[in-house]
Image (cartoon, rainbow, N blue to C red):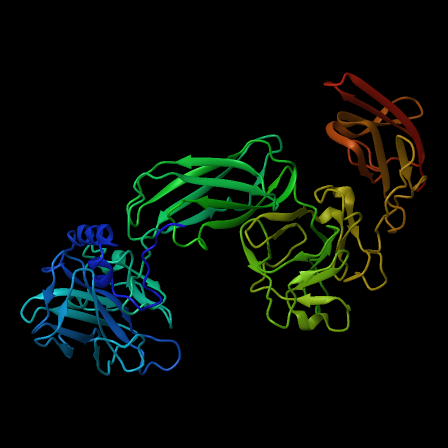
Length: 577
């Protein structure tokens, strides 16, 4: 276990530990940091201010002073003031040091209200406001330190720029302790209140993964993730070894790692690129772990992220789109869980290639979607009353749909889960939805979409009216239904062509001939296929025009160049119009 200087639990003073020689290195470092102050007497600083306690403010406000130097300071005649930053020179005296007020090197002196724990060195009612406001420390004659927050704020109430406005329940804290650039915006952060204790641990590194955004990494290419390691502790790392490791989908074996020997001073950071040489195709939920032996706080050493390689993930499918509702209807998008497992949707978002809006979830709403279950995202959920029995939720905004548009589904990290760029010619019209034929097949295949043929014009929360089931696995080249009737009535408008190969991967060409041997359509060319693949065909030729009724031959050519295997197969299919 590393030795960590942390007084957050109370019970000891930094001065007492110093007397035993335990934290001499820490105090020397704090003194060195304090030497960069922009104030007249940087040895003693305002180290922490709690001006907006959670709940009722009375009784819990405090101001903490810290001696960052190597010598004790007698505080007789020193003055702590609070100021109303909305007016110039509007200061109120809160404390004046008496003959016994003395602050040892590394020791804290707390001026606070009656309910502050541990009890302050000086108890008094404070009237700190949520801003604009300030606190000033003088030695009785000259300013020693000043901290201000909120805007607009007169210059006398802050150094450099005002500090960040701390949310209710958090204090303004120097991080690390004694860190003083003479600029409140740089020196202070919002953090948990620690009266009489250090704000920062002696050694504490924080890890952040910079998510790549709406990126689908190329299959077969390495994945690079940018990470940021930041020293939020009070001491430098001293060139000790830092190790970052990337883990895939909960595995205990790292798929990428990086080792650094950088000497990070407090507040310094370093960018690290983690490289994953051989990611498998699909969706991955990954984690990055930082290992630094002296680290005192491990909760901020792991960061989660996700990424997609090769194509959209196949977890949740955009299955139906109502882009042109009737006048009294609303736009909506139907999602279908095709993952084979329950999927957590907390923080997921829907939008287009530019904007995205998070699903509105709450304690009484959904967070999990079971395998095979539907979910509707609607612009106006109340307009869906009586139209479906499945769950309908709204998003925190809505990107209006049109007849030619893009719908993108993102997980909580911003990784694309499904993406459909549809066109008017694919189907859907006023009061009629655009339905997906097979949710397990590519979303960008125009033949995988069509207008709903349900009497109501849509099938929200139900199996789509033009859905085709899977083809039974038999033979190397199978077509179903056969014959098929691509006449636009929603029944057997497309054929599913199943390809089975005796190799794991191959490059293939799938061609449609008429009975006179003429090429009428090319369904796949130089396509990378697995041992089992499927294609949809809507009966159109290479020019996009419908082929006439008749009998056609589908011919497969596939080659696995590495294994030297060449496969051919053919079958007949009938079109009836």
